[in-house]
Amino acid sequence: QELLKKFKFNLNRITMDTYSSLIKNIEELKVPDEEALKSISKILFEKAIVDQKYSAVYAILSGHLDNSYPKFGEISLKRAILENCQNEFDSAAFDKSKFEGLSKEDLEEQEFLFKRRVLGNIKFIGELYKHNVLGLKITLKITEQLVNKCEERLDEESIEPLVKLLTTIGKRLDEVDKANADLYFGKIQAVSESDKVTSRGRFILLDLLDLRASKWQPKNINQTKSKKEETEKE
Image (cartoon, rainbow, N blue to C red; front, side, top):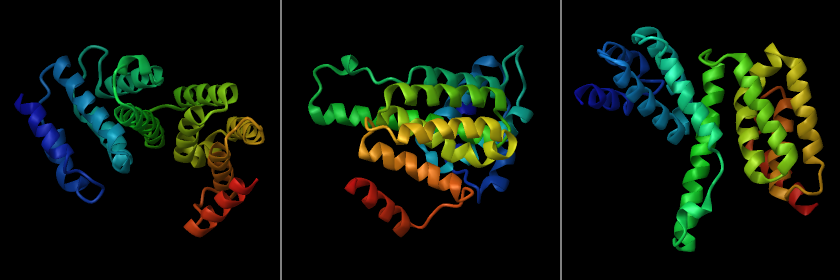
């Protein structure tokens, strides 16, 4: 379909630097029906979760296009994108049984691709919240689910998505709902002190706690390496 080709063409070129010159081309595309709108939302979603580097750009674009593109009944671009995010979030468990017969190397590649999707989706959710496409209530619900999962499992598979989300939204969450932020980070502190957490998992959590303690100002690379070395020695 010509519409989707044009959308993909412009989407592949958009960055913060090219945004102002390309947004008009994208928002002026004629979206004829609900099926086309859902197809566009799926393309945008897939691009956002695979290309995390530009996740913020895609979140801004999502909000912009939600105001520009027509709605069909209860289906808007924003709703369609959020449904994609929710479906991906709900299926965030790697099922090895689907890949029986694969070599060890191929299985590891599938696990890597799956992990990239999970973290890409979490990053996109965070950016959607930061750029006022996703509301606080849903964001808190997702964060709470990730915190609870982290407390229950204490493994890197549950730690990394939580850290990805809070690294993305933590500064804003501290500003708008410090009570819940304090609650979440208190639980994260407790998890980081558990002897059941791997050294790498503990380092990831400590790095997040340090980031918050420094008012969300990232440390330089040498400081980060030093902290990791200290953790690995323990």
